[in-house]
Image 1 (cartoon, helix red, strand yellow):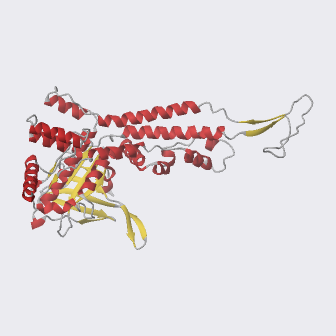
Image 2 (spheres, rainbow, N blue to C red; image 1 turned 45 degrees about the vertical axis):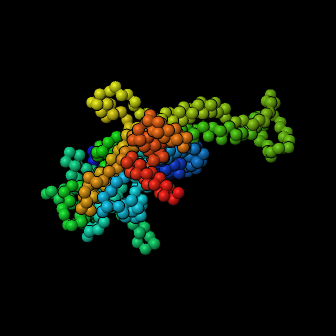
Image 3 (tube, one colour; image 1 turned 60 degrees about the horizontal axis):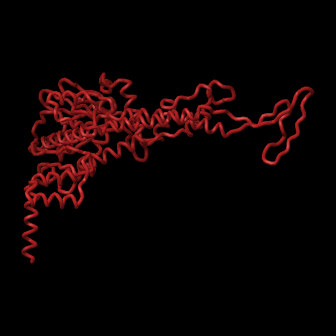
Length: 448
């Protein structure tokens, strides 16, 4: 179908990057399921004699012995934990308060949905969120779309997207794969949504509360660096490539270990023994002028150490690629323009991904507010400013408070520092917190 046509930016190379990063995150079983795509079959397996099956059994054993590192999934899990280690404040108009507990219409919390956005930006460097509602009207909800499913768009006009929703559908006890595409576009100033399935299309445009016309496409897509449909390299592609290299080296390394332990008994200038094993005594007779010999031989496997060193080198490469995500510039001497140009040119880091994740969620929630007939300006997702600042202890809080009492620190500064340290709530202002403290003091005095 024409609707399945993909945008020119989705090249073969980009799809390969996506497949590698997704598979690396999913782990060893997914990597091995790709077979020769990620682990080429040694040429000797199919060309050497004695392989009636074309070397399939030998290759399967070769692949089974190989080990794939979980460094991708471990790295992403740690980074998601750092970004979401502190509560991220999300302000919503009252009409959308229900989204905190049910953001996607399937009982997913806002917090879990936000973590999914962050996780996908780290894995694939791309994610989209659609604010949607039932065609006949109802409460708006958010639907997330992975990088692979956003297959076409109009970058200049921003008024056209095609989302691939092909998946297995259940009929009774059976599942069947069904091609399905959702088309979002603006037609004569009106938002229109179509579902293409089985060669036919259906208008499923949702309506906003009050029946107002939706005058923009309520879909937002982002890369790991900024909001927009441009396809960028996944931020942890270097980690995935290093993990793949380690996997391929592991296959050869473990093959050599296996072969070095498989000694073969060889009879030289004599008949093969009738029995082998511990305690067996062999008597061999040679022809005139030939000395018989019986010995065990095994491959030298001289490359074992070299393979081990190469695996360690790629492990270091993976660690360095992941470590770059934690780089945050502290140069305060840059002009605003210089800083902006540098941020646009450098690869994404952990802070930029956190900020894009919050911005993506905020824009999606503002689209939902428009559909709900609420004020979109009331939607605010506060982005973290320093992810690597350590939490402060109770002793630190006490010391800071003594500074406040002695006039060495303002209450506002104390509160902001306590917020960053994970002590004070990020959902309250300094004034609101102080009012609560005053209220508690008043209550305690009244009890006394």
